[in-house]
Length: 108
Length: 170
View (tube, rainbow over the protein chains, first blue to last red):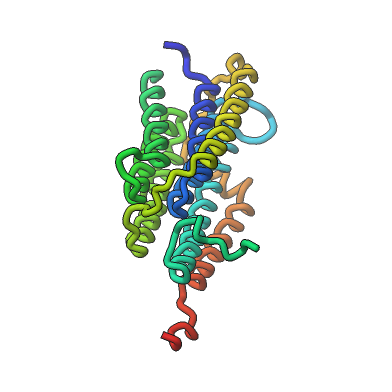
């Protein structure tokens, strides 16, 4: 078995990102689309952690910078999920649907 | 260690696929459960990358808080299956083609970048070092993020509050 390096993690991250994007593009349920968005965010955090682990030693910055970034991403994602789900609940109260095909009020 | 990487990444991708396409169920609750599994497998990958603190945070925040929020909203709305099963062939094909193109670009970029030679795994994700860094170099972003959480909390309360005029109308 070959040595697992940075590019292995990056390929997994890219595949996960594409899965999330596919979910956003194809699924029509707002909540499932939102879960796919979370998948994409998780793929980005995986890439950042892998970069942080394989970073060569340098005088500029700490090797843990990537992990700090991931920490902030997780925090912001939690806030984003809370606000987004509140928006979806508010929308559901008004329209009784979570299907994006029904949300056509901005169409001409 | 290599075999663990392959197991965890295969499980992550499989569960991620089942979040998006589940051939057996169109229920959002199933998707949420597979999202939990994806996140747990990803925290296994974080452990392999020696980011122990982030692995713990991932499970606590995502599998603990975010998924509970998702499930709570799904149960609140009382969504059953997706009724609309009509398969939009053109849109699905176009979306899949675009995503396949993006995947091809990403993978070829990674393969051509030749990171293998100098990628030496060096650091350890010590929680103490992470905390020290967070309170020295990154103290301003840390405070801003706390403010963001406060704003998000106020926003959620404001958004989910029923307006008084509607209550009177009902």
